[in-house]
Image 1: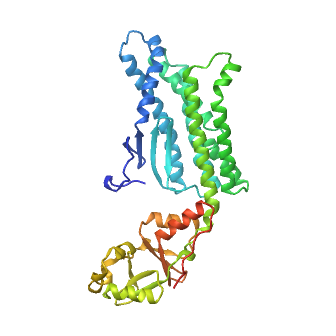
Image 2: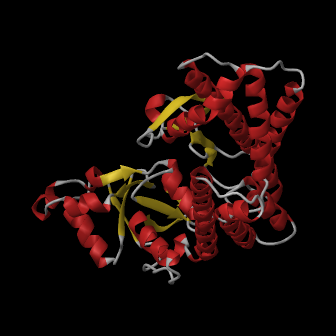
Image 3: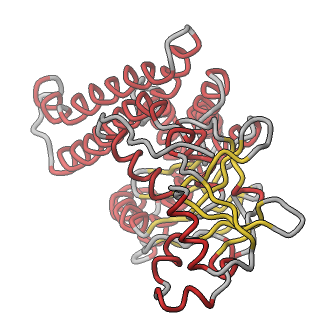
Length: 391
């Protein structure tokens, strides 16, 4: 999601915004610099062999290789982002980090087909870049350019193939999820299967040093072990997060707006706060709304502001002074449940929302504090608490 600089979400510490691709912010994490330096050092012997005598410029060339390789990663992520845009999804940003890149979406794909396309275009882009580079390698003269083309071909082919491994959080895990979803398995169950695939992949990656000893018959070096552990931890953590998310989604239908609604008292805008509170207590109402002289709710009293006001001041202050104007995003359906409810209150942050019946009549008021308590209960597998509902 893009917009003027002052409307953007603040960047996490250690993150820099580089620019935009198709209106999508591109950010890079500071951890990338560490990997770039490691690539520069690792490439130095090969650079020296094809271009001896460079001296300290050998490491500059190595950094240039690192930038070139991560530009291909950026192309991989941009293909995800553009495909997501095609299916109407909002893309928050493309980020580059030490293990590659990530495309942050506001929501999940609306269908199995969309999920499949968005997931598979990334690896296909890497394979295409690798294939073109491999073809150029046969006609590129030896030297730094030849070395760069060869490294680009090898890296992208490896990235493309590995990303098709059927386990989350890899693209191949999303492809597997989409296929299972399309075959009739529910999206949550498909996520669980793909997440377990990611856990299996994590175990196999961590076992790579053992493979080196048994099959390749050489002792694993420090790089083998460090890289295996880093990638294994990344895969296991991503797969576990997907499992937790899938289990929570199964419980989200228990989170509904209507049972959480508080009874709403409507009062004139100029009514003193003390009188509005007295009437609300008599009516056993959990929320107070102000109405215009022409009728209709125009404001919702902020519960926190009401609690902060000293009792002795309440007889002299009009209720409208504590009310927030009801904007369009604060009028939501009383029939919202699960992710639709969470999305509605996330897109338009407020402390209270006006709940409406399908016919447009006011049903009650929804407090975000009540939603947060219910959401916490749902995450723990307990029934969501209910308020005294409606009217």
